[in-house]
Length: 114
Length: 117
Image (cartoon, rainbow over all chains, first blue to last red; front, side, top):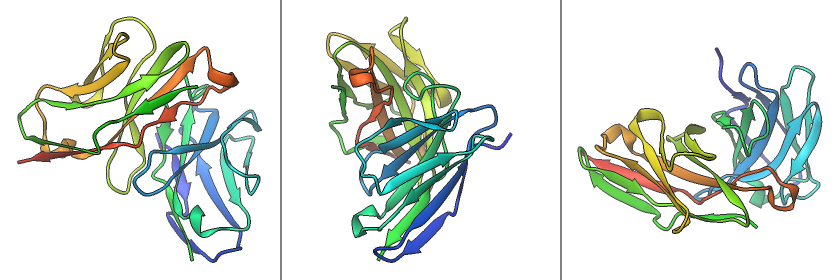
């Protein structure tokens, strides 16, 4: 049984560019959450998707957007990249709302903005 | 509002000794509490959670945590540390009923556990 997978593993982008990160949830999970983890910090919640809709959103600007597909996989899009967007982006899946059910995290995508 | 604090950036312990990683929280209602571990270049792995019931929660890899409502703490413990336990540990809390309608847990900044041979 595959766990949560994310692609790509690493990514280097230039300021102002756009990026798309991808996530496949653990088998049987229908809820996907995205987090940004800056160096030396805990994960910061970006948004959560369930039934192809954004259900919860953290304190991130509209440059951060997402999508969930019918097979529960998800994408995170970031437009107009800033240097401060450099971080590890984590995808987590759960069998229901993240605040009740434990989340299973992927290995993350390391984004570097230059 | 919900918040969580991990007062120690780093904890050092000798292999075979007991370990404790501290976590305190603040919520308006009742807390849902979680511990996760992160190994280098890996995502977070779930260790254990407290929703209700027994104050002592047992989790993966021999870890346990004690919920203390009066001290608003949820410290992670293990009776005998292993070198392989060296990693980054995160505590997370969610208010119940949800604060402002948010079901999303708030994570602490993490504590680096170093177990010396």
